[in-house]
Image (cartoon, rainbow, N blue to C red; front, side, top):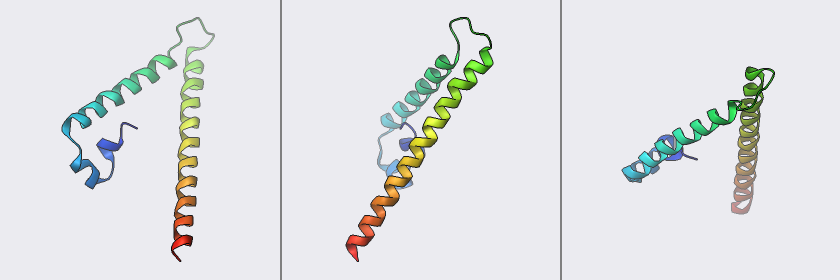
Length: 86
């Protein structure tokens, strides 16, 4: 969500104010920091690396599911729009 002003479509990036881009950079680092904090075990665990791998793996899998869902919805919307035009 913070990547759109930074790596989104070039026409969109050019129209966005600089403060929004800086806010996106700060938001990206805050999100990355939050992910690192959640992967670090604050309680005693048997294997800290396995714990971190499970947490980070869950984040990666959930993001892949979200991307797949987004692509599926976009494909369906494009198909409906194309069918309604013809």
